[in-house]
Image (cartoon, rainbow, N blue to C red; front, side, top):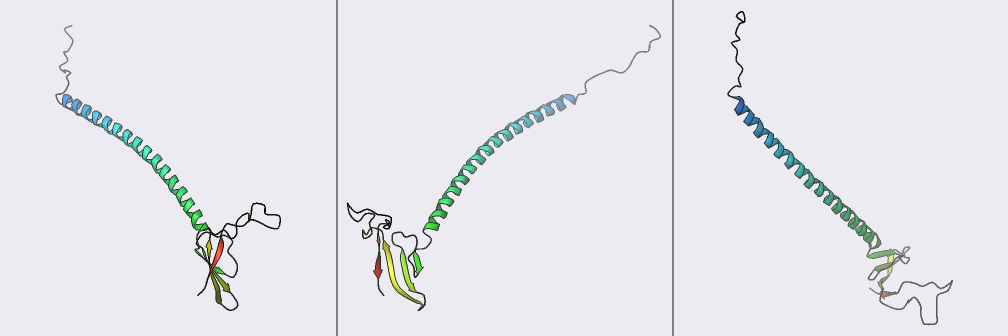
Length: 143
């Protein structure tokens, strides 16, 4: 083949390609570490979110119980001419005369007194006209 012209171009791998290949390998390993770290952080964050939801639920339940307790016991003092609907041990009632704008009596509910027991005796029971009342009685005080 005498008429053929020799190709003077030679193919080779540039000298910098080894350095670039190494840098790319290092970057790939770092990216994998970042990915693994992000996945671990996501799992920790998920567990933390579940714990926070549990704590928030417990806090809401405690707040609900506190609100119920406050509603039941919101006033240690009842001010008015009529007896309060609910009573608890130690509650104070300022019995008033609304027309004269005066306090007629101070009363404290003593739940441990047995003046108004559920059943006054062993053979006396409540009937349609006699309802059991809370155990305890009002103690009068004067000023």
